[in-house]
Amino acid sequence: MLNIKKESNGTELTVALEGRLDTTTAPEFENEIKESLSDVKELVLDLSNLEYISSAGLRVLLSTQKKMNTQGSMVVRNAREEVKEIFEVTGFADILTLE
Amino acid sequence: MSMRELDIEAKTENLDQVLAFVDEELEKYECGMKTQMQIDIAVEEIFVNIAHYAYNPAVGKATIRIEVTDDTVSLTFIDNGIPYDPLAKEDPDITLSAEERQIGGLGIFMVKKSMDDVKYEYKDGSNILTFSKDLA
Image (cartoon, rainbow over all chains, first blue to last red; front, side):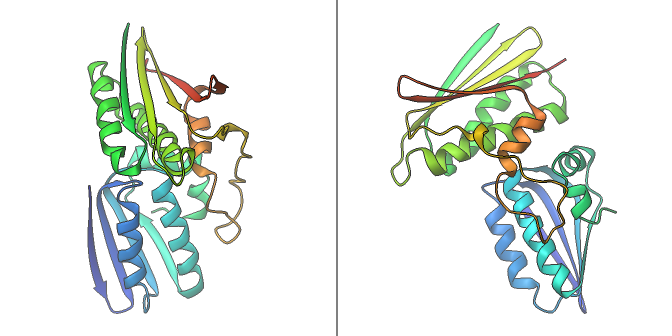
């Protein structure tokens, strides 16, 4: 289960994820984010309520980061300890901007 | 010691059922949140791998066995699909920048990093992948 909340403010978009970002839910997130990025310069991902992320979720974060590198910036906010640990192990802590 | 098995069609739609089966066992042993998440991730990666590749384009069965002894949980995944050793895959270079990073290979890498004793064998027509994790 994944809930996606989007809040747009001019060219800034905040996306809050709640639940699990896994094989089942990652495609849904990928579609949502693809549709919304066209005019976005600053993307904020709020992960305070994200409980779980698997490699399927990491893949979407990576492709989103790549996209934002070409058109603006992306920050990942409030990731929980367990999720941060996954970012560390996979080297994503160096790719993403964690706040 | 306890041992349970789940026979299930290897398709991604069944992932939730597989995770529910594993979590139900883990919850009996009060393993911490972090350990449970790491085990769930490993289970997801291996099961989804089987679902995607073992019988493609057909669908076949997978067996998931969970054993708990003292403070160690062991998981075994068995399928009768094409022989495939996921551990033979080269680890991704995790020092590369976002632009240089490739999308693949992350899942099995996470399993190797977070689980102990990850092993693969092909025996009597079956792919058998096992890993264990200390619950202590």
